[in-house]
Image (cartoon, rainbow, N blue to C red; front, side):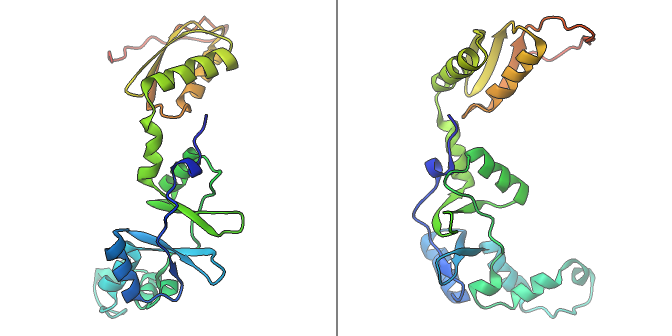
Length: 226
């Protein structure tokens, strides 16, 4: 069963309005020991996110003239200088906010974090109202499943119920090893693919004995022993 964002998110969220001052945000970061917070409009909808990095832009660039000589001028973008001159959350925030819903899968949230290079995602309802926040650490909670829980799902739910086969499944530290002989090569490869998506699986070791396939040329290769 796939875990959703609702299963791992934090519901107690520190947030600010778009007119919150730089000083207020700096104090909130220190007091609550957070590294970022969502920015809400007057209707309570998420419109952006202010992070430590956004605020450090002001510290690093605000005192430097935009036309300063040297290589740095070519590297710094005009947008960063504009942000450095900001004094409120609305000025400094990154927008639009990248968000997820409580019903999204943990896998989807992890993919968003990875591709968009962010450390946390505000969680919003269908009206974009804030209902929680999810961090990288929260997403890693899916790997807390025991080996027996993983083995049972892989064996019973996937192998028996979906593929009607009963190969041997071994699990150690979240690493699944598959033994047995699938009916066809495509079935075996689909089993491996499906097992990779079982919640909590760290890796899959394919030790299945594939039957010969007409027209398929097998290439012998030496693999290191695990």
